[in-house]
Length: 82
Image (cartoon, rainbow, N blue to C red; front, side):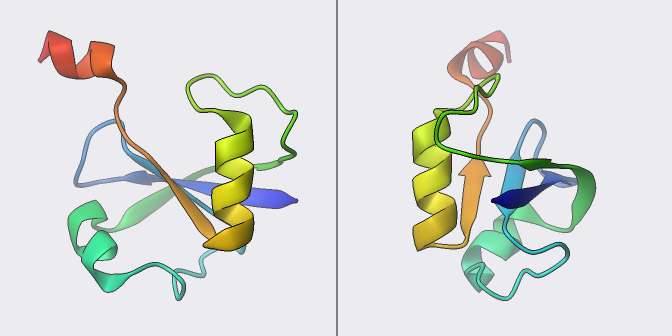
């Protein structure tokens, strides 16, 4: 499945993965309010077995197939440094 990743311009180190480029219609409005506008970062072919740098690949895949999106929040190390 192809997925598209957007970086939040409002929240540092926060990314939104969606299944259709520039289609935010499945994203809850409350999430979009917090996420703010997104800047397109990259697209890639995703599968449950694909290794991702910071996220559990199977969880991302499940979220994309059931919700149509996945939200990546800053990792705990980043939050600790703040």
